[in-house]
Amino acid sequence: MIRFTDVFMRYPGGKDVLKNINLYVEKGEMVYLTGHSGAGKTTLLRLIALAERHSRGQLIVNGQNLARLSGRRIPLYRRNIGFMFQEHRLLNEHTVFDNVALPLTIAGYRYQDIKKRTHAVLDKVGLLAKEKVLPAALSSGEQQRVGIARAVVHRPALLLGDEPTGNLDPVLSWETMKLFELFNRVGVTVLIASHDVATIKKMNKKTITLQDGCLVPDAG
Image 1: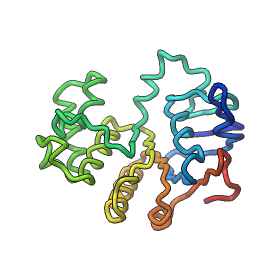
Image 2: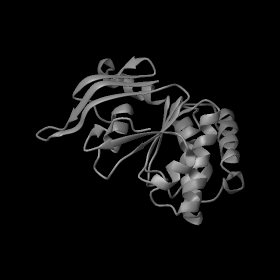
Image 3: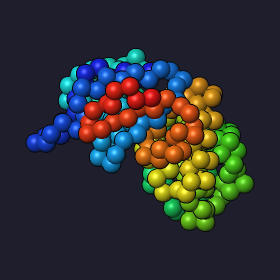
């Protein structure tokens, strides 16, 4: 699913943020990416999502060589990826339903299909009863679940999370991680960047550690 081979990432005029990354995540795996702040976790995820282009090396995602992917093909590529952020990034003036349905609306799905898929995923995250509510009326944990629902409503093959539990207490962090596991069980490949080591250990999944832009040998 994801293969990094001797990948480096350097921003113009700066030092290498990622150095000689060799990494393989199998299809259907659930993997955690950890490391100190500034270790390169977010950059690694951004390379996978093609929010950034790596400087050298080879990066293959779902059989596609990202260096050869033209800019006009990036939106189509991203339709197979769900992305979760630490900040919920919800549209506050729109209902829970509209927030979750947004990727399907943009992709041009018929309303009946949008309604069916959105209701199904809201039910899975326990928020179907709040589909008409505005985000401001939800708790922080509920807002995060709306974000998760929006990330998976288009049934992506790959789900990426960048510190998705960073603003949550331990109980909500655990519940959120278990939701990711739920989607992994139905075949979604999941890669989560997190510094929440205690919760990661409890999840008992493969863990990869970054330190100063390098993979720590034998981590996970």
